[in-house]
Length: 380
Ligand code: GDP
Ligand code: MN
Image (cartoon, rainbow, N blue to C red):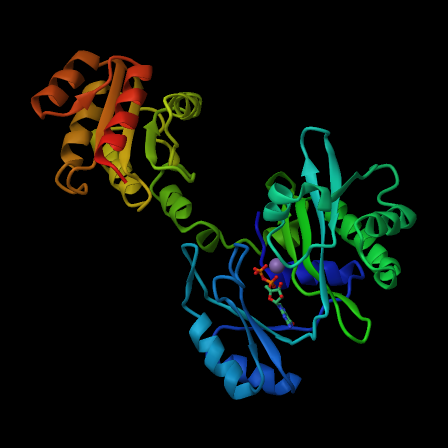
């Protein structure tokens, strides 16, 4: 489960990590009065569940309360990577001299939390990992004793963090590692860890993801859930009784049953395509549900074509075909759709599709190749 920066900072604060005080505003005038309360320059920061807010214009410095009001007014309501900003964090501005990166991730391959340290902080760590992986020092945490202070300091030194920062930064890294383990996190990051001209070392940004499977025992964090904000489409789908997961390709994928849908994703990739989503309509879906699923997937502006892969059992092929035909009127003009129907109602379904002039695949592989080819033929 994702949580906001201000919530991640609250967790870190409890584990002893230095963070700036901060308050949440949902209106520009609230931001102004918070800034007036702090006195001096503040930073106004969009609270949305994505990184890269700075680059997107969601983090702004304000010298005066009036300016805080003005920038908060611009940031609130802003769209950042598909998420609407509904609240901002107002926090006294730091004078930042240098920025470092500290992180802990759950490494599933080695089945242990791994600490990541880099002197190249402030920027996107994925970019550092891709271009200059040698700038990131990795170290597994032994869960029997956690990250020892000596190891933590040594990691910072090896990463090239200046020696004046090593002692305090090492303590923060150990605290971050403890926060990670005790909060049942799958990721905990401080980026940037800031060094100020007067020698303070402080977490200027924080990101924590809590393991969903741990929410029953992390009751406080569970109460912070904002499913609607985390992923508006997934939330909406759930309300409609559909299981939907957004991915980042352009082929919409609809199927019945999680196993079939996952296999379809693999097959689309093998055919050279990139799935845009995972949508499972479940068992026994009627035409109405199929139509709803298609319109839902087409709603994603990244989707350039849709593949429907149904193995008929309690879901009937003819019902599915009827749903596809019903959806035609409301779907964007020229949106390629390829269906593969197999099992119960297969023949009736195919006949209906053929009558309506729609494409079907002889089998799953054929259907995947057809949709990828149709999207490519359409261009862009
Ligand atoms: P992100 O872009 O979502 O990771 O948001 P961050 O909180 O990391 O902010 C982005 C960048 O804004 C940071 O890397 C800093 O360079 C800058 N920034 C954030 N807070 C402050 C601050 O208090 N003072 C100054 N001078 N810069 C800040
Ligand atoms: Mn950041």
